[in-house]
Length: 414
Image 1 (spheres, rainbow, N blue to C red):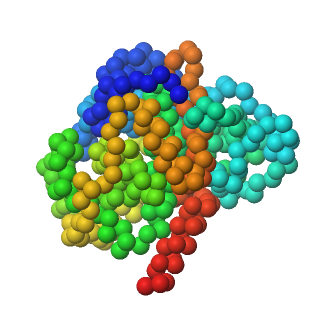
Image 2: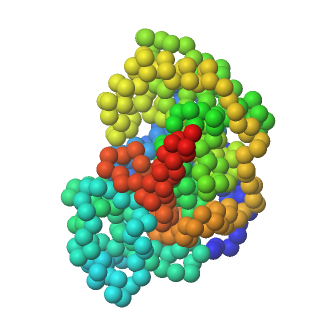
Image 3: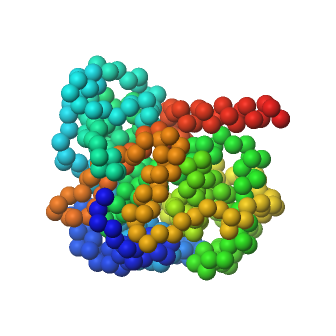
């Protein structure tokens, strides 16, 4: 791993430098990566949690990225870095191999393909030629070839030959002030998405038992976020969705407390994962706020009209509102496991150890950093973890199927 660096900023996120310092470094480079504007859309809603959009008109994926934070600088850095990392994944200039799986495995080590997130768009053919790229494990001990689908974010058509077997997404893509900072952030996202997949198999009754009692939270920064929602007359609920991996993961849903047929603002959810539970829950809350502003602003090119129509249905909103405002809370926030380390490297070591404890291999990473910009960007792949489950065509992996079977067995035994 890199030389350990002490965290210098720990409000809402853990970074080796402050958001202001990050912005000072990256702002002169934004136009070179096609980022034409950082827009503050906070005022389009009445909650007041800073949300920024980064516009990239010629993107090969989505053209608008979002960022949120407890301050405007934090939200700006978040939005800009998300756009930057996606640009890097759209414009990979690392060596690749174009060959079949059967040909590649003759002379090179290939990741276990059964552990990767798959799609049912087309069956995998071991004799079909496709692109492969080399990845390294996070312990810097071994290298493996992985499908290029898991590395790039160039979604322009036609896609490379062989596409359709593995999930194309930004899941596990992250940037940071150091490579390890980016890798830890990426791994948090992968663990979060895996937890969300398992969470989706629980009944509403089981999920309800994991609702967090927000009155048990004493952290002033989290309290400040909750106060903003209260002052805006917005109901908020949070559930502990932590998986067997044991790293704090939360789901948050918000909706206006008062029904309005003239302005039926959307109920929206967000999720967050971090070794520090305070950061994890703040990510979930701010992501829910960001998601609501995304629909209000109409800025995302991947938000369909169906999302708007569904979330504006009054009966749907009444059901969500009742769930948030009337159901009891059971989980004491203080009893949820959490770790606060001095360095990013310690965070990363814990994440790897937690995965290993569940029989999962060391995650892999591809360093997408470009020397001309010197902004650390990585794509992390964690074999065995589930991918993004709520997209058409996703095929559940072994973890999801085993969890689903266990949930079913428990239900039948009652």
